[in-house]
Amino acid sequence: MKVELQNLTKIFPSRNKKSKEEVVAVNDFTFTIPDGKLVGLLGPSGCGKSTTLYMICGLEKPTRGKIFFGDDDVTDLPPEHRGVGLVFQNYALYPHMTVKQNILFPLENLKGAERPTRQQMLDRAYEAAKLVQLDKLMDRKPNELSGGQQQRVAIARALVKMPRVLLLDEPLSNLDARLRLQTREEIRRIQKETGITTIFVTHDQEEAMSISDVIVVMKEGVLQQIGKPQDVYEDPVNLFVAKFLGTPPINVFDGTVAEGRLFIGDNNVLAVPGARDGKVFVGIRPEGFIVDQGGPFVCNLTNVEVMGRDCSVVSTHPASLNPTVRSIIDSDVKIDPSAEKVCFSLKPHKTYLFDAETSERIYFGG
Image (tube, rainbow, N blue to C red; front, side, top):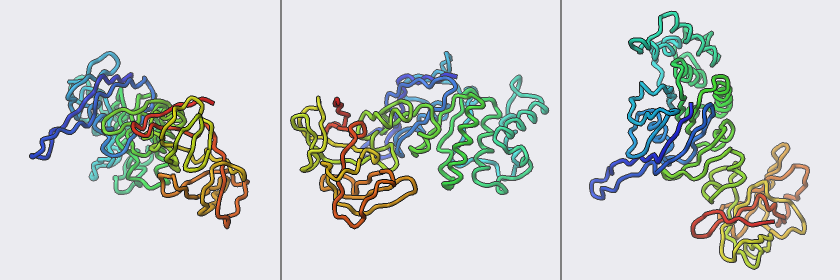
């Protein structure tokens, strides 16, 4: 099911009686979510991603704009008639019910012609439980399950209605690191097997990049960039997107462009043909450094951390806007941890320039 959002806007009234300044949670959001894809809405807390999700499912009414499921305008349709399945952050399971009863609950509340027979309900419940690999735990109560299992019950409950669209609101945030990894792999597997258009809200860029077909990066209610996860990572449109994606995060410096050369502090580090002269922000991905004894970019060495196949070189630089400069290199490259300085050459395709005033990307050739 294709989901189309047209100029979607949500404005909340101010809670401050003195200023009465309205809060624009989502601002003129236009985007088409392709049929059968898993789309990650990504951004920091307060960026409007959950509000967007709740407008799609009908729990929030847009101030302006339209929502289409396929060719159907569902903007004013009640949630129960939209054909959506919603999985909340806190599972929202009924503690006094078994797994089977929790999964059956949405079907038992259907009325009229939509209500299946009891046997059809049971068949669909077991089919949904099997999909999330819980069919052998149907008689357990939620408190007898792990956090990951409870989350899968919530997913099965959403899937049992055979929704046109599956909506996941930060479904992994209550899980520990290992369960997060397992459960996000499960979500991806389930989505591929069912082919249901799925919208996944998260503030964790690693989660979004690992399982999404497309990511949508938001900031303060405004859409910043849309694309395949790797494409957005490698080609950010502004400094916010560049900083938000990547672990470790991108290294950011004050820089200057003069006569086609990039200077970071006193270091003449790179040719940037086509870039206009002036002050810039420079973003360098951790993997964008090459250890080079004669390299033009000189940093003060702090520490060398060997992490199996990779090595993390921690250093500082006067022009850095980060407390430390972190460079990821192959562990085969040997660095003397007692040295005071470390010299690098930079990979041009991992080095980004941003306007010092607008933070928009500045492209250069070469």
